[in-house]
Image (cartoon, rainbow, N blue to C red; front, side):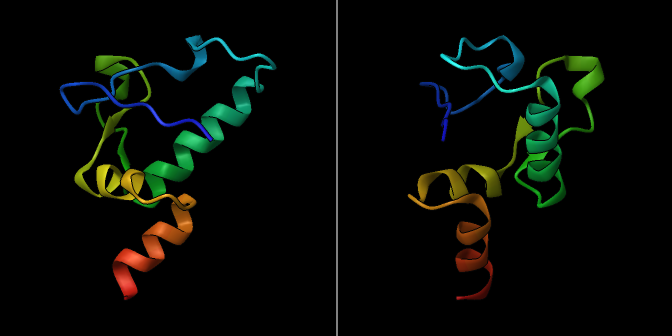
Amino acid sequence: MISLHSDTGTCNTNLTFIYFVSAPDKSQIEAAVKLLANIGCVDISNMERDGGDGAVTKLGKTVSKLPLGVRVSLFLLLFL
């Protein structure tokens, strides 16, 4: 699991350019970004204009603070 944070609280990184010991396929990264967009953790509406993998939403920032998987964190925040 990778968590990207900066001092400004923003994450404007293109995940395809991060060095991995064993890099995932580009399609796997795209699928992960699409999943995060579908559940509201990443806004990809301006991705083509701004580049990168989209902007992290308020929900995404909150979900990233929980030491759980994205789906479990979202469930806890929305239903408990």
